Image (cartoon, rainbow, N blue to C red; front, top):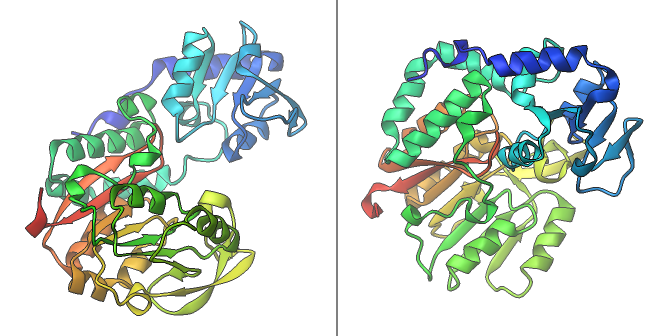
Length: 361
């Protein structure tokens, strides 16, 4: 199933990397402005950066141009790793632009550039725990989950973006699948990592007569936006704290959608357990907290035991989330069916769902 994937060389990528590195710097372009783009620019000289969605004119001392301004002989490395990676590739391909995605460029360029998220750690973990990855495949409850799982594992092992063909960017659908069996009334939703209220608003669209919402968001500015966005709705509890396995004060890094608990964080926030924070009869919990999901699940043990809620847990922040999260949930109670879905064309937004067996749709 996965054995030979990572050993198959991408000849097209190898040839592009050689051409890109040997080319006159005036032909080299980078699409995107992020840590990946910066790591390439720190290694070799490029002509310009490409960004169709900014009014800025320079980045790292180089010009910013639009896609339409790429010269016919330009060579482009695309550093978009999530959201619409495939869409960007198709747009450039349709325009006749010679280009390569960052995943393959990292694999074959030989440059000391930033690895894709945790891929190296994932590959080591996969080799050391292959039986656990096979176990997860056996756990998954439908063909779509198994297909999704195998595509993502193959993508991570091979670095080939082609394994993501078929996935699309669909944030409005994230966390909300038919197999959840959500009801229009009486649902109690816990939004862990509520950000700006987007997910809670999507929940309300589907469950307009909900009983209560508990939105946890530790970052003050995000909470202000969430309160404004959801001001017209009743029975929403805005709780400005993080969730973890115990009550404490921790350092927190403020970085928009990537804000997270971090020892190097610039502010302090309060965290507590879900068990101590919510006594209501919870029916649905969503978690997207940048790698702290395991700790939050530990702190929600009694809630899960008592209420048997549906769970939608992000499993893309840590290299071993694919098996550690289900192992942890099933150690609390094992009467769940498990599904997996992916909501972008790249590395982010993979969600594992735990559906109580008694309500299987």
